[in-house]
Length: 271
Ligand code: E4P
Image (cartoon, rainbow, N blue to C red; front, side):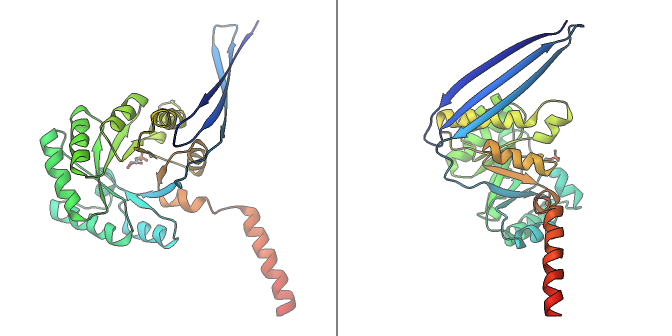
């Protein structure tokens, strides 16, 4: 016989960034063969919504895609990584720097350029070179111990950083402590291994709100439009995603049908 356990909690959080009332409701089903199923619902009521607006970054090194997103008028920045640069066939120090410059020339701000070094001195040297390319550059540093030190160093130097490859709340806390401008939790890659990436975004947003950390939560590894919308519901500061996810937000069959009808009706009386 199945047993049902129900837990509910009410918590109120307050901070200078936003106030939120959360209601968490968790139900555990214990199956007859000792299997456990958990269902969780979360309601969040924000009394004082964030005053900043969600930023849209495009996650690519493809110049055509960046131009297309920028032309929409809603793009706030670009994130790249070594895999995305390799996908565009960009190699060699001079070409890599020239490509970052080309990206900076398209967009208004926030171009994340990732270091390749994994030791403190190497990351610092590389990051300084990247930062010299353009004021729009944000130095992207991996979440490793040497990376934390490098982020702290860049923070002291006034160089903006994006702490990447973040997969836990503890890592995000370290990034914020080091003064990272952005922290990039990877939603899709967590989902790929059966962990809920959106839960991590929610957890980090809550932790940062508890203490008023200035680090912005940059939801990365976004695979589809629902990821993006759910990030907006949770209150992520930034989303970075491929062009098709951004443009996918505009699609709705009723919009297409409605527009076709409007145009047909207009043509009937206007010839
Ligand atoms: C973030 O900055 C990364 O470049 C990116 O979002 C990773 O996404 P992926 O998991 O789809 O490669």
